Amino acid sequence: MNQWPSVRLRVTEGFDEDGYHAPGSLHYSGRAVDITTSDRDTSKYGMLARLAVEAGFDWVYFESRSHIHCSVKKESTMPNKNIGCFQGTSTVMTSDGYKKMVDLKIGDEVVSKFEVNGILSFSKVIAFLHRDEHMNVTFVRLQTNNSNILLLTQRHLLFKWENKILTATYAMHIKEGDFIYTRSVANQTMLAAVTNVSLSTQKGVYAPLTESGTIVVDGIWASCYAEVASHNLAHALFFPVRFLHVIKTIAISVCRVVLKILDFLNCDSWSLPEDIAKPSEERIVRNEFIGIQGCCVGLFVLIL
Image (cartoon, rainbow, N blue to C red; front, side):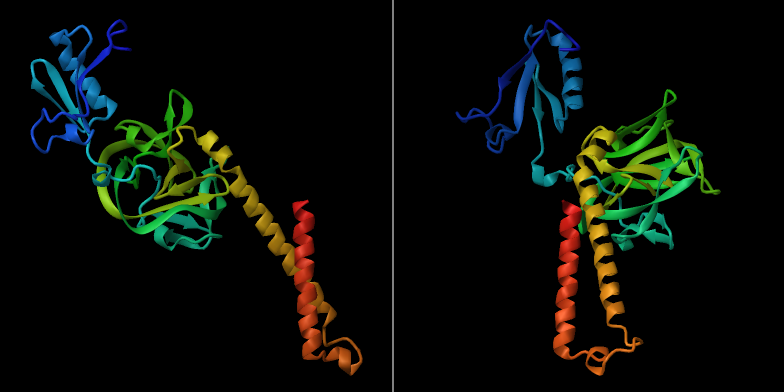
């Protein structure tokens, strides 16, 4: 429609039910089409083939002068694109030092975003959106002019500086010469140019989710999200996950406070009668039950 507004796509062959093609043809499995333009102008077929490649067909060629043959691979032979992850050997900076992605745990505080003044700030890992140490995935390998190298899946969001605007874009759309945000030696924000983009198939995928929705991996600032083209939209969609994390954190804190109060009430330093100062097993069990009740009541009040 964009290339030739008045011309339509013409499909001459799709799924073959009549046995017109050779044995083993992809037309029998519904993975091939033969196409032309509606005006059958053969001078357009070269551009039509290019458009077919851009549209995502895995195989495009001139089968004859009358049409272009296009086909796609089986899904089982394609890398899983429905995930957005980092490679297990990638490193992040935590409040306890550097860690590999494979060793990162929920609750770790990692460098995740740049403040307005350029200083790095920490954010807590609240979940893993994906984690599989055995999966083989094709990663985009990005290298910058300040020697940062990052591996991330093709549809993972990365922040770049374009036309004086911060934009989030898929890793597969990053090209040489683009400027992305990196961590400097002084732990501040630094724009670096991408000097090399390639693909690398490796094992292990990890997708940590932080409270801020962003993370600095191998010195490069990236989003925690993938598949959704807008970082802000993805961050909004994951609000329930962040909200539940806050509720869980508060509930745990309330439980700890209640248990400390109960422990204080049973303190042996008080001058209490012997049967109270040294409670029986039945009393201990009852106190533990009261503690559990207190936690449940506290959680119920917080939810309300």
